[in-house]
Image 1 (tube, rainbow, N blue to C red):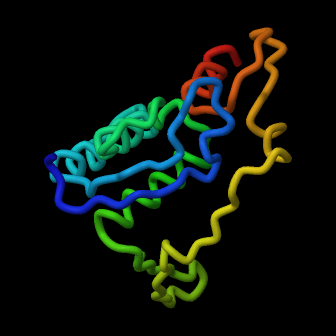
Image 2 (spheres, one colour; image 1 turned 90 degrees about the horizontal axis):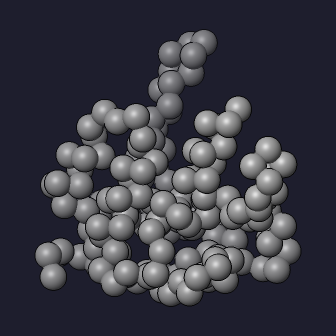
Length: 150
């Protein structure tokens, strides 16, 4: 095991929306220097790069790459990997474009309300594409494929 800190979280989808078996309990380790360097490098595929980092930080594989997860699970893991690595406090500075005044605030990422899976959400995760004549779950890989056919 090559990590300092690890925390276990449950995916908002509870793993129920995928066609294959997905363990909803994800144990994430903190990012390492190599991950930070990859995250900061310029790339044409930043979502794929971050998904690879998330996958590397999964202590136990869950049965699916984070790149193939629905967007809500992917974003949830992004927040949690940040929390495991740097802590839950996220410092923000905003600047008013009119007067230039700066506002500093701190957001506690652990206090963000998470909406868990319910049967009602199924209709949002499955899309039908008349151009490709297929149905699919809303993942980054499939959304990127759609941009090719525009």
